[in-house]
Length: 247
Image (cartoon, rainbow, N blue to C red; front, top):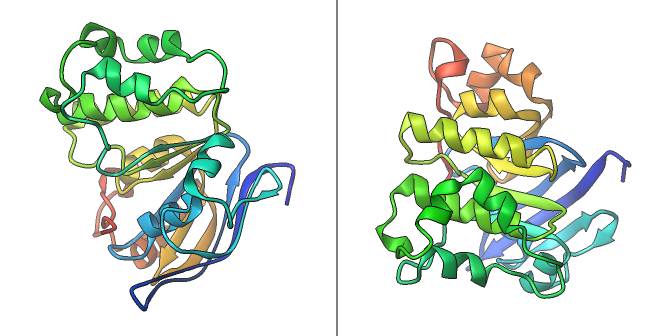
């Protein structure tokens, strides 16, 4: 594994209910910045993330900073410094914002970085006593990302963080991810290509549960024909398009 690679996934395979979902995914996450995981609907992006985290049965190799983790349970992967903001945000609706954040504190990970979270998301401090279920979609996404920043993580995985959000909130979330990536590498599953263009240095494209492309993000997005073939975007400027979502 290169010194510039934090996470190296090789031949990742997932079999669920007798059905092969992933057929041998290879990807690298750089030790800095944002690596985007892209693909058409059903390509296997979310399953890949779940496979990395051990949330689904998996085989192959998943090396985090040189350490093999494919046989570890999810909680052990997380304790090694992986923060996860899931596609559905995963907030506890009946708990307050403060309680949601408190649950994310990881024992033995040092002092929780509340100052950083509140600096990036002042609303979360203002709404600390508010039930998370009453927040807007954008505010719930702030909680999800904020939880990943509380601990001294080595990697943040953000699965569709801008999905279903208003354009203004998409911009705010992108700004926060951009700042977070200055300190912690990010694996970003994202269908909004304008966000990918802004944030990602590297990208991996999946197709039918396999790796179809790996390389610099700007090269892929700068090649209209390749982007349309791999991502299924329509005609017109790629910077304004949204790629097909994963299920």
